[in-house]
Amino acid sequence: MPAWAVVVLAVLGFAAWWCFVLWLVGVLSGWGRLTRHYRSAAPYHGKVRHFRSAKIGWSNYSGCLDLGTNPDGLYLGVFPLFRPGHPPLFVPWADVSATPTRGLILPYLDLRFEKAPGVAVRLSAALGREIAADANRAWAEDPPTE
Image 1 (cartoon, one colour):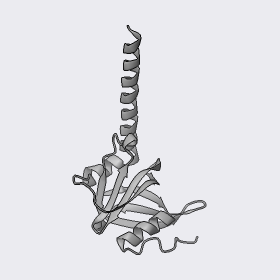
Image 2 (cartoon, helix red, strand yellow):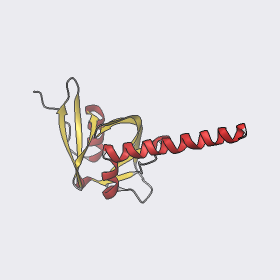
Image 3 (cartoon, one colour):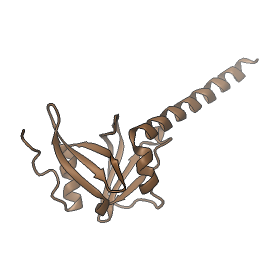
Image 4 (cartoon, one colour):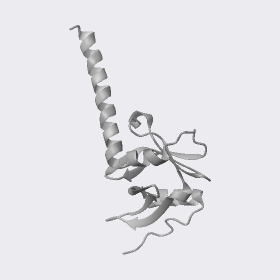
């Protein structure tokens, strides 16, 4: 087999493996359940915060999320390099609930979704306050002090 063919097969193999792993993370983290109900079909228009972090299920999405807000709802997207298995989402505000929580050290805001009740998106309290302000909601005023 010529050397160029080995290189091409290696690159294609790596790309297929990368897409499979990202798809699997999306399914196991809860993104797939959110996709069934909130997959975004239209282009998003509104304020977007790029390169944000959140925890969805057991998976940390560190610095690869786009979080957007507009009067209608919450937009969640993933940086294109990590997008396989993670289509953009748009959740109407009526389907979003938020609970301020305290981790071992830091306060967080857990977002839950009406049509996917087993999925939680955990944001830092500061990012939660920004989103709450944009949404005109009273979330994350002060996390509980236990």
